[in-house]
Length: 590
Image 1: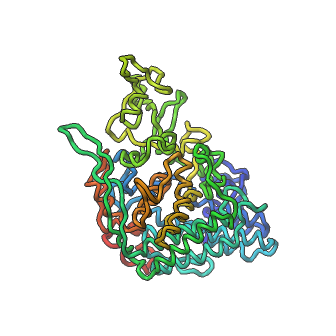
Image 2: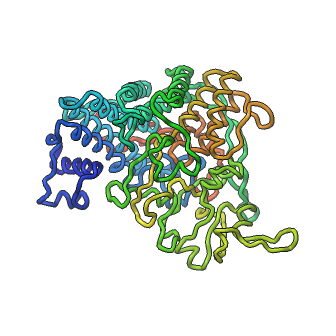
Image 3: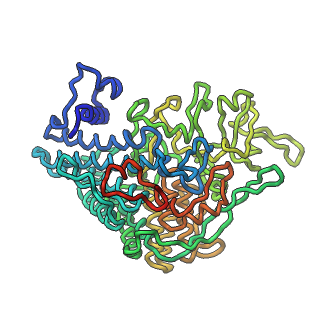
């Protein structure tokens, strides 16, 4: 039974997302005697009422998941290529998953989203004034959000309970954990319904910022490729990584990533799934999205992909709709990725989380994803600015010359290049303050405030192209199939000014293992800091080998050693205690 406080909280979320006036923050709203809150039963039987329920469900993505900086770290801190200072990277980044706020919210956040979606469906379904397309679109979006939540859960925890109705409607909170294939069957059912019920992004009724039929189909392709790769029993993957540094006396010497081959392991709980069946479904579903069956999608020029103005564009299929300066719907994670700035344009706080040196060295020097997608210059107010200096990355010959100048072969000093020609003394060191910080989340309306309108990219068209390339290579081990897959892979590379891959000649990828490895590496480069890398390693059964090849700690001292228990997150103790049908935790966790 909803309490008055909970009803008010739901109402606040609905009003805020609909752009309706609210009084201060949630606490103030509850205390405000003159503000007459809306009871859920008072939401009208109308298009406006249905939209209120849908908007209130979307709000859980921000309220419970992204608002307090638990997401996106919960999705990506635990992987090989990402790093940061150990104090900011936290227990999750070091492999300490038990009683961890990140893993706890990875359980609670999705289930809160599922509950809200079920509640909304139960209130929209009996509405009589809605046209069929409007009602279908509303329920389709709610099914989509439930599917997304279950996808997060099954990847992170394996077997999980399924809740199809709320307690209000007679549901039992004490649901048992369901086998992994059963959870996936439920996800597929939800998305298959959603893709036929929701508006395409080209339909007149589509609202930018909401999920669409294309989002449902794209997520379904991602679900299928996850099932296919998890079920595949044998195979090899070539990975670039390994030991990050050696010591020359007291000097730390960074290494180049070494190529090593990993024999994949079938993911526990996936043995009953047919890998070829789901790779085929992933290929076909991705191709339907690419060919426009579910709307109009396309890659943008690289410089336009991560602009705030384009967060609901043809490439960005589904993104988080955060609101600058809003206590409930503004996000804090952009500070960790790109920093919070002061009036001088210097970083006041943040800029903690970035990509490791080995990740940077995967790229050609001309690739836009490091030329333009990495912050090469910054000034920290309390560190650099205090002594008239600045920072640059990477500490290689190319960027050292740009930042500090050099003496050419004629003996003439060539001064630093813009923007390093401002008189500051730039430095680059081998520490946690010098990483490959990405610019993906830098375009916000105000980078001086704590809560920004940074987007989070749930689904991008580049991901769909790479899903097609990966799946097509697995479905048919032939030159013709590989050529079709190569065309999609190279669309992503060419957009970023990278040299196209070839099926013959030097550096070719003319066999299944080489092509598979190239696609997974491209995903690591293209989708960096978008919450995919850990789950790509997990689903391919190479997570433990790749993490442990690092040899303990990475370049800046973050522990990367992992054991079998790290393949799944621990179920929070609160859930084990409340749900009488969950009596044991995942292997290795108390």
